[in-house]
Image 1: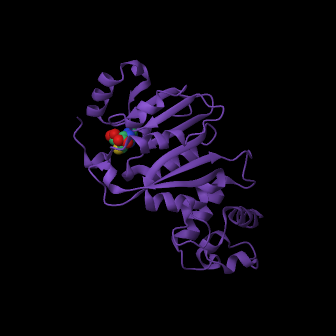
Image 2: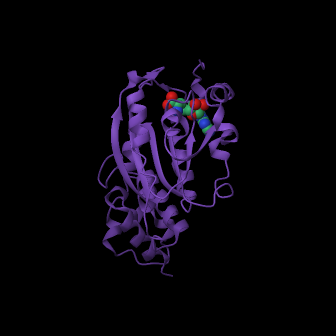
Image 3: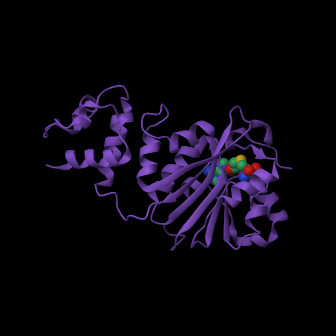
Amino acid sequence: MVKPKKHLGQHFLKDKNIAEKIVNSLNAENIKDVIEIGAGTGILTDFLLKKDYNLHIIEIDTESIDYLKIHYPDLKEKLLHKDFLKFDLQNSFKENIAIIGNFPYNISSQIVFKVIENRQIVKEVVGMFQKEVAERITAVPGNKTYGILSVLTQAYYNTEYLFTVNEQVFYPPPKVKSGVIRLIRKNNETINCDDALFKKIVKTGFNQRRKTLRNSLKSLTQNIETLHDFFNKRPEQLSWLQFVELTNLIDRK
Ligand code: SAH
């Protein structure tokens, strides 16, 4: 047994049917390399090894690593004792990869931001999140959870909320329900605007969620007309595509 550590977000899934359902949610179309983040005691790993993937495990916890070494000796050098947030994806993989995991909840948003940064190689993600975060990533405009994470993810990935998982199927049970989602990278090469400015506008807009974009984006719009109707709206009323249009309005210098 591995003693669950709170600071590593360790809640071990007990239900094998749910584990299998998560693993089967991965399409992995034209993908060979699959990374599992945080394998713990390997409930997902078991099902992943039955597939024809080139599986890599990234796990930060020494005790889990020791456990996995004993139970999955075949993994060998594919078992990486590392912090996913510090792992260099670009230089480790040349082709499209997929990422899967019951993600540690304390770093789950950071995992998504890292995926977006590495979107050239991350084609698909299937992950379990705290339900509220799963809802935020997949939320549509107007929804109260719609925010920065929704817009930035949806610009580059098609997002799907797959199913909800109850607290009792974990040891120890978390305080909240969980949600499993799937992200599949969009085919278009670019979003047709400056990516960095897009990100800045989305973040600046949502920092003052209740204001109109005319007010919240003042620092970025000094030299342009703000007559367009987007500027009368609040950030949660704009889809990612409208944020792209807004970025191009602001970028026209
Ligand atoms: N997949 C297992 C464990 C989920 S708990 C299961 O479903 O039961 C989350 C796991 O992520 C733990 O094993 C924890 O040690 C690991 N983890 C936490 N932070 C991490 C990080 N920064 N990088 C890699 N793994 C991490």
